[in-house]
Image (cartoon, rainbow, N blue to C red; front, side, top):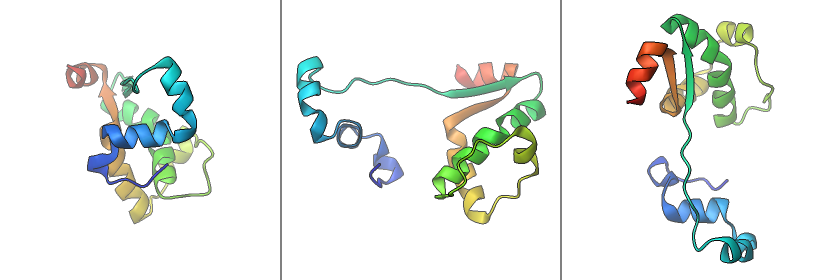
Length: 114
C-alpha cells in the first residue's frame, strides 16, 4: 500500500489509486463508474471494561506489529497479549490505532456507536 499521510488516507484519489490500480481499469469501467464505499468498525464488547480490554489485546498487538513492520505477524493469544511489553514505537502505533475500534462494556459500546 502507498505511504500516505493520515489526513489524506481516506481521500477519494488515494482510495482509487490504492484499491483500484490501473490494472483494474477495465474491471471498473465494466462494473462501475467509480469505487463505492463501505464502512466497517471493529467492536469488542464484554460485561466489563477490563474484560473487553483483555479480549481486545491480541487485536491491538497485531495492529501494532503490522504498523511497526514487525516480522512476527502471527496472531497472539490473549495471554501473550496481556503479558506483552510494547516498545515505544509499538505503543505509539497502538495509541494511534485506538480510533479504529470500539472496545468496552456493552453499555459503553452502545453509547459510543450512537
